[in-house]
Image (cartoon, rainbow, N blue to C red; front, side, top):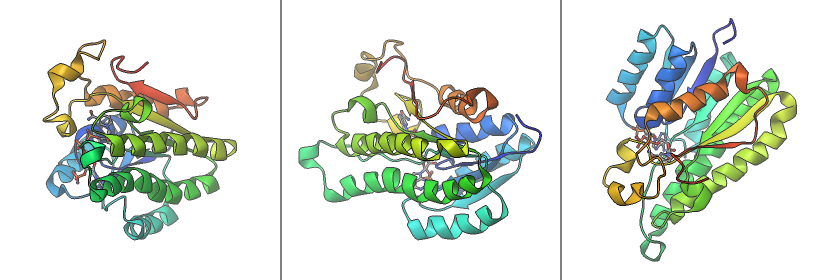
Length: 243
Ligand code: NAP
């Protein structure tokens, strides 16, 4: 960790993986810009955790898929300060077999993951280009690597995000901006409630779901000095589900 305090913008950080990433990065000494969509009380609790760790936290409530909201919120902040890092983690699922899937469910999942990645990252990377440094981590999914029945929308979005992140990594490497993907498998959050876990765990060599901390520790590593020669990589945190 460098001497000056660095700030990381974490999207989708009111709950689950993003909340744990925010706490973990705060414990490692980063200030947090904490984005979320609707869970005001949960977001406030995470912000309190960050502050109790001695770090600053700004709550940024906006829908990552709303380009105007993203721009209106981030532009004034980015004029004041260029964050060291961005963790694009916001996500939803609207699972269903493709034959039965509505256009709304297809479009909304692509909008939150893919448009959201584009809208948020575009603003932040512009500022990072001027600063000639930065770290970007996109949180994708094993579904985007190997596919998952019932998740054509989600897999398409996450697969697209992986391709976009690799392309961006090539665009900005010369400016010392590193772009990587963390790709979780089954992680213990509200997102996997209601899934047939006993059946799904048969495909996981480690035989258990992962914790949010096991994802956050990889993100923390990618934000740190030790990850300075890593860009364009997809790092699976999936218990061996996909190798
Ligand atoms: P989660 O517990 O459902 O939390 C989702 C977070 O994303 C919440 O903070 C939510 O904010 C936020 N969010 C949703 N839509 C948003 C939007 N349009 N704009 C801004 N924020 C939005 O999910 P999770 O399990 O932590 O998942 C985090 C990321 O990991 C997602 O990208 C997910 O696809 C990915 N992932 C999860 C798993 C898993 O097994 N859990 C596996 C692979 C990948 P509100 O609370 O305000 O709605």
